[in-house]
Length: 472
Ligand code: MN
Image (cartoon, rainbow, N blue to C red):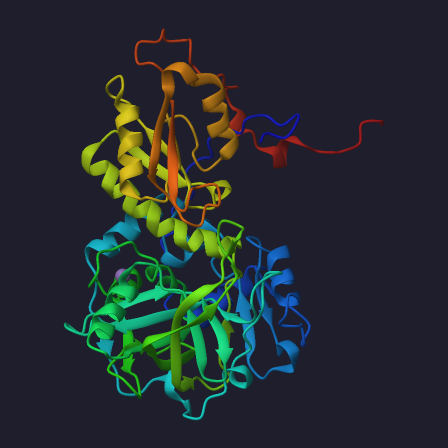
């Protein structure tokens, strides 16, 4: 992983404290990105099939993208809004090292939403719906079955209690008023099954174009019957404004760009997929749930957000809320754990790096077993000491190369539950591997003492380097 000739970078100094107000509006975030040269606006008319995703991916993690009138469509498309973890910290108004604790605080103390009567998202109302003409839904990856809505927050209500759930599900545009939805065995499916058992359709609202923190909150790993919009409010530091849908009791963010109102149909399934997913492979085609669309509402001149399947925005958005939950779970049993990171090389799901101050010999192995228990997606865990920067894969590799011995420090668990989307598993049955790359506690002082050039971090290059010419 280390490029030839490159040295192991030192741990970066903690980022300068930047305590800003959290970003509460999508358009404010676009302004921030634009002011700081992180928004690329393309020529009008980029093609929705492949070309839009190709451009977004070329700029993945570096610049967000804005596509005016793609394919001549009246609605502009945006992508890559949160494809970098430092940007997410910035949107929260905290430093990157405060990101996980801030998110944990919001999960612990959600803020109930505030209902309003008038909402920008209901400025324009369509009751006769043709999704193909209303929305510029792009096709991203080579073998995707067609256009998809990928950044739609699906809001449903528990049919018994009325408590809302928010989640992103991939949505295939299957017809003028039909969407195919992949519901994994999580909360939306739980509510849908309650309704279906009574022979009822389940009302849904699909919200496209929300502020960055509401988008992040939708990915929180919380128990059923925790309304993720309340976590969004806590991240904003102010209750989220919501408005009642026209065709159901669902409350949606009032300042969103677009809302699709519809129903998950009871006992109806249709073919959906394949679709390019986060592991960089296709999720297969199969019989999936069907949504009938009853209405679409939007702002005047709305923006359509799309998340390119398998791109960094897809990975990072899912990764950070998982890290927050895994860290909290581990720290409950192991106060020695300092930080965790789901590395992008492990698609922000499968590879967990744990930074810890080992107190007892053997403790790192307990921590790794705890990590496997914390989320079934975690496949490989590397435990390292406090002096390793877990956000730098080369540093983690260095720790493995110099502090790990396979006969002594390796943990393997056979036939455990893993991710069904990992093609190397046997339909989700997977091995787990832990690498303890921590130093032995009784090692002599200098044996694992990392080399360091005194003053390296303090060199003022601006003042020191005066020229690039050596022949005078
Ligand atoms: Mn949920």
